[in-house]
Length: 349
Ligand SMILES: *Cc1c(COP(=O)(O)O)cnc(C)c1O
Image 1 (spheres, rainbow, N blue to C red):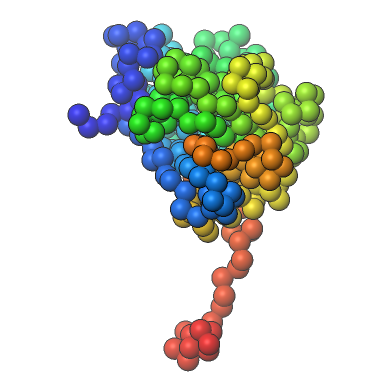
Image 2: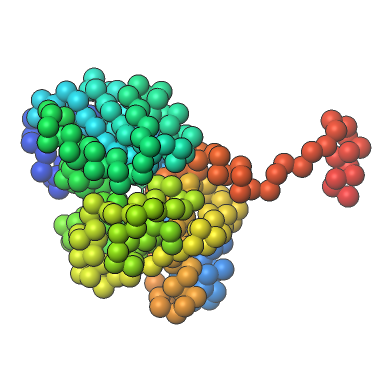
């Protein structure tokens, strides 16, 4: 049977009512790409098996689609007509796409000037009502939490349990792609902490072994690492620019239960890992998506993680084309030449 999305694929593991209409864009089934060069660079001759779960290849370019198919299908089942979310961008784009398919009204609150261009472009194209607020993601989340108490609107942030139900399928896929065996370590960025919570749910439910979790926060937005709310989070990794994660407690519990680790990485470390992924692996991701690798590099170096004969999966949460502005800004500029063959010869010499 052709792939038709994560709900059809893992129906037996999802508590969605049998007669629910499934709104899908055939999300999921993303490649688990074996590292070509980075494993050797990070941990030479240790037998490290390093894999990247490239979630940027989902229909709207991030893992958010896994959760959104479930959240929107359930919203429709309940008879909802309007959905809302606060977003650093990817939730907005995903909500907008699934809403477009199902005829729902979609409102998204984004922090002014802090949303990457590709995410804004997509949200607008899908026809969402994009509301730019003079505040942070956390301010937006407080606003949408309050409005759904006052009105008949469905909240589709990862506070919505259906989001986690959908996102946990990422863990099922990793196990299936590793011949039915969970990896030793599972590394991923942590923003609002929905994804780390969902992966842990997934691994536990699937019964194919449990990895240790490694969470990565940006140094300027690391409330779980520091144990304190961050009032003014700042980082180049806009998707995880969050100071008060909604799933904070669950994330701590998942880290605890998995004997995991959470660490913060500087913007410089994030951008280094981001360059490594593109230039050594051919994997172009948005900056936040590289923070899992940045954390792994750091902890291997500090000898807090022993890579010897380990299978390690790093989730690359979103596509590089989401944030072309940062990509161009942080890259070496194109070399300029006259349109003459001799100029090209001179350059090559
Ligand atoms: C949403 C998102 C994250 C963070 O996921 P949480 O569930 O909020 O912890 C990381 N990277 C990208 C690209 C995202 O879109």
